[in-house]
Amino acid sequence: MNFDWLWRESDMIFDLFVRHLWLSAVPVAIGLALALPLGWLVHRSGVWRGPLLNLVGLLFTIPSLALFVLLPWFLGTQILDPINVVVALTIYVLALLVRTVSDGLGSVPRETLQAANAMGYRPLSRLLTVELPLAIPVIAGGLRVALVSNISIVSVAALVGTRQLGSLFTQGLQLQFLTPIIAGIVLSVALAAALDALVLFLSRKLTPWERRPA
Picture 1 (cartoon, rainbow, N blue to C red):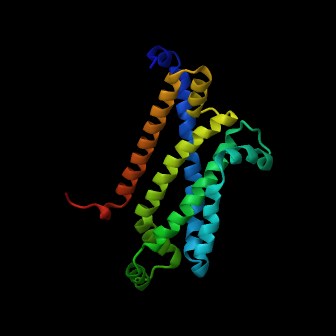
Picture 2: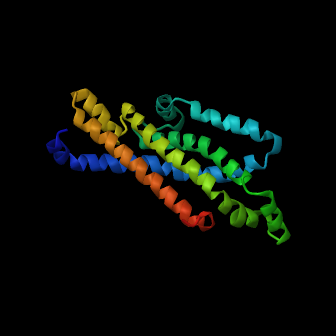
Picture 3: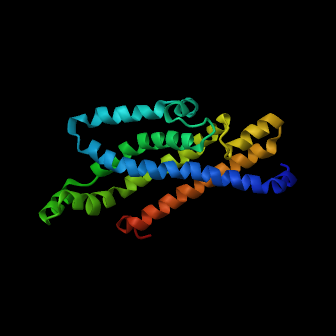
């Protein structure tokens, strides 16, 4: 491990870290915003729920590198444009979170829904103030998976020239130099752990009724 190299290249490494964070987190935010209404629609689709979830799940089987290469043809962007990575990862997040949102809403006890109806809650009000809050633990679990998956998949974009922590892997491979590879792995793991802990923290703060006494 060459610490002199790490110190000399600290500004570059920090820039790659910030880019990696942005490319990982933004698609999750966009994917969640899209998955909430879509997951609700799937949840309410009755006999079509299974086929729709299977159809959405197929999106996650598309190879990430192929998606990074093909999207510029459809979006009219340049191959190095970060928007390609954002769109690709949003598709993956959507494939994960639509099922998660649907499952989360399905986990709300029927007795709770009946009680809300008896208290005069309208459908939209019941969804926002009863169903979604109770579904937060399930949705948060899906968010944690999506974030960790994104942090891993973003690294692949280095192969098409998008700068982020994955660039340290390609640089180390080209130079036959282990230090940038180790730095990229350590920072990727640290980023995944930090974002996972943040989602878990927010989930617990938003669901105080889930806490149990020690």
